[in-house]
Image (tube, rainbow over all chains, first blue to last red):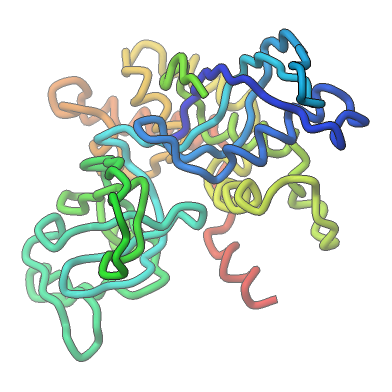
Length: 188
Length: 135
């Protein structure tokens, strides 16, 4: 679910932050720049793990801010394909389920990866797994166990002309078509 | 920014929770409403993790567990998921362990579940998040 990513960055500390401890000023800068952001092919940055080195501190002519070369490690959320995760069912429509982990919402379980056979109940607005003769409803807010089938980092659309729906920088596709997957309550 | 290594190591949910606590995220005990210095996004991850099996684990319990399942020769990613998910029924073990039927006997799966139960503390009550919303 979570991995470490080691990074190197030239960080500029603005003059008004120079009263801070150096380590604190640099930590704040990393926090501001990267936390809760998706780095393509790396994942969603959760927090700072550690800082291994801070070098430099040069002040260039015409600039009152020192620059440091900083090596650090970030904790990122990037599940691997095949990983089993537990989230909460956020919403359903004819295309499938939307699942949230609370801190990450762009998880979709498409219709073809639901338990077979499942049908969408239009009036209730939710999916139902027809298990033998039982109707297993996939109610909102229920805990869902799914297997990651893909993690994608779509490229930023070149120009947003207003027709593009909300852009997600990282998209996870989930699969619940196996024993043990789907609503957690079905299996306990 | 240069990303030198995007996969510099896997972390268990417990380890991430430890980092977040160290970063100053409020802990369960500190429900007085005093916000810590952590950012809102860290807070959300913290909330997810405290209500997962990681919420009750300790470094010691994970060590005891991994030591106890050594001979099963599970892959690193499989062990990681065992710790994160704390399987309590055979079907959960089958989900996590690739080609489980070939690698583990039915008895081994049962024994693994027993080991999980003995060494990893029970997960916090799943009702946690809904309780929060109610208050």
